[in-house]
Amino acid sequence: NPNPSPNNPSLNPNPSPSVPPAPLAPGGDEPNPNPKPSPNPKPSPSPSPRPSPNPGGANPSTPFSEPPRLRGLRPPSARKRPLDAKAAMAPLDATSGASLNIVASLCCTMGLAFEALENRGRATGYLMAALEVDARCVEAMEALLGSGLLGVVAMQRVVEDLKARLPPDMGWLADYYAARGSVHDPSSHPNVHFRRLEAMPTKKSGKRGEDAAASPAPATPLSTGAADVGSSPNSVMDPKVEGGWGLGDNLDVVAAKAEAAYYAGDAAAAKDLALRVHEVDPQQETCALVLFASLLELGAKNDLYYMAHKLIEASPAAAVSWVGVGCYYIATKRPDLAQRYFHKATKLAPRLAPAWIGFGNAFSAQDESDQAMAAYRSAARLLPGSHVPSLYIGMEYLRSNNLSLAGSFLSGALSLNPLDPFTFNEVGVVAYRKGSYREAEAHFRKALALARLEPPPLRQPRP
Image: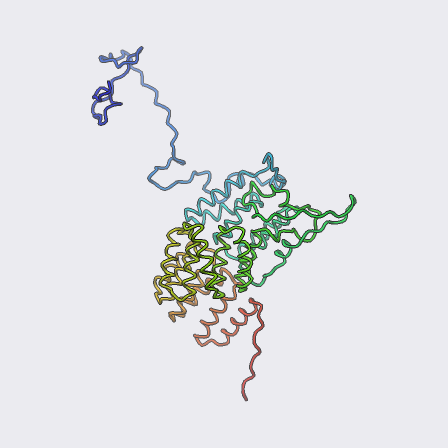
């Protein structure tokens, strides 16, 4: 019967809750109109509970509740038994993948998920656990560096621990970790790790004969994940190779060097290096941001306009494209238009911290301190381990002549990165305005020493 009726509840769009469906007859499929009660009723066994579709039995309307076995910062396998160093450091098999560490991959995935949910503490714990289980998990290391979850000093300790645990045949990865970890250390640019990564390898003369030419290093980015590290035959050199690793054309190495050059104050070198990566991979977000910041520092308005226009045509839905437009209008002294495009970038990518910093700079250029502070605090929430948002907040308080709060935030920036010459310069300005001239001189000299600039000679006092 296609028409809905009270006796056919499957076709009735509004069945009455007071009329229960009739039970089925013992031997047929049709309902029994006159069911007879059993003389000896037995209690029916309770049905087995159906598995909940939500993990941990959580209600779909409530936030995700983590299972009890994953509530620790370290993975379950690392808590239950000591790590097998031989198994953890076994060479990867590109065909079978038998030696891939599943625990490290799961911890890295959990860390990325918590970082997307803005749970920074859990994200840091799981990413650190992934590196503790498998030092070759490059994706976890890149997430720690790119998300600003750890300060400079803490990251250097992590890098030293990873370098000690990597096998000798993966020295290229140890040098890459060290180079990436020293990006915010201007005193180490250009450092020995970049030189070793870029230098061409040389073979040792051995018993089996003559020197052989090394294979050229790939120009593609390094693999980001525990499942892919070392799978390329050209990505890991022979352990007998001494000297460099021949990764001078690798995009990740060039991008790290461009970022290090920018933080060291060498905007021209940062522009050239970032442009090399941008010509090969225009979607490389970090290098695009370094390129825009370097062009803005150099005052190259025409180049900024050209690069931003190209990115807008290629990928108008990418937030970094509109960051370039905002940088162009900052360079042309039109902060009202820059504010509009930085706002568009934050709408497209709310977790892009450089867009929030540019947004705050546009407000600061219009003397709107409250809105600038709100934008800088959003960047500080996204980069808890970076000193840059605290530095900008201190500079904004210094601009508004609030010296006490400026000194507090600049001291916080120094605690996160005690190697930044710009922070020491701003601390010296605060001390100078307070009248502490000897303290200001000490901070200025420290900034010059970190920037590797010679201080001017002291003038002799007049007799």
